[in-house]
Length: 390
Image (cartoon, rainbow, N blue to C red; front, side, top):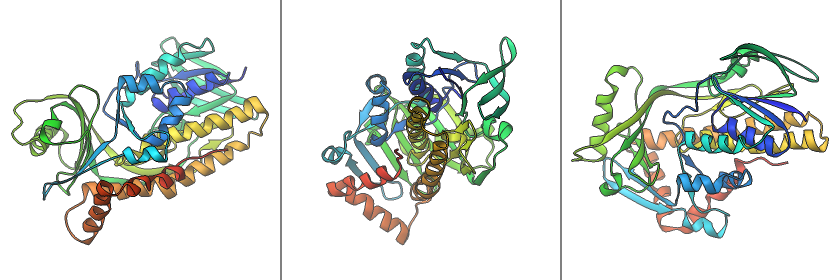
């Protein structure tokens, strides 16, 4: 039985490990933190990644923990125009006509519970990769955990350890080409009844000052509000600015509970390869984008779906390991040519919208979503362009 080390305990890492165990491989997953990190990050899963979650056997539980959602609203802050539209027309052309709303930490926990049912799988928290070497037959990894340092041998290693990936930076010393945006994002979780203020369960507030993504996270009044600010503003006063944003979005609100917040910088970056020998990168370890439009974790999920098919072909069907070059080439191309440019366009529309011909053309396209079912169904070619298959 071939043995795979997965580095990183986010959703991409746990789902990859789960898929490998289901395909008969022995899997060890290590995560540097003592538990799954629950800071506010991705929370919306597009309709075209749900089939992959079903194949992994976790979609039903994910829908029970989170919820399915069709409704959207684009809100032009300066004019108070609210454009409500729905994913319902996708029912005629796609297996799923809804998105899943669920915190990425909850998705990782679901995958972890399923993974732990396999005798061939092991999860080690508070354990980090410190170095690796490899040859044509496998990878030797140096791991540091609660019991000290060990040197262990694996057939393959998958780096799913996020934007600051140790696998990519320290072990493989790969470039991470791209840019860092000058602004800072503030992702917050808040208990505040946004629906009573006229919001849908997923909202894009379009404005160059008050631009935001506002999305419901669960069946209670827990919401994710992500806004953008100048990165030179002091972090020690960020809660004051959070309060000001909430009161702009929900005028007259009397009380709310700020549950969590997480400031972070935004990037458009990609490693110069996603495969070095028997070491493979997936998700943010390989490429990272600003989160507007939810294409970061979406890209990571589509990475791992393709990677699982390829490793299954190599390990269980006798395909050449060089098939991994196809994985690297295709997923890098899709990120650089499709996902990252679209995320930049989304950021421009939501967070830099003010006035002029560009905003007018963007609004015309959004208004069509509310009145023309074919405009909603026109998302299908983009969804297909994001996916890879053997």
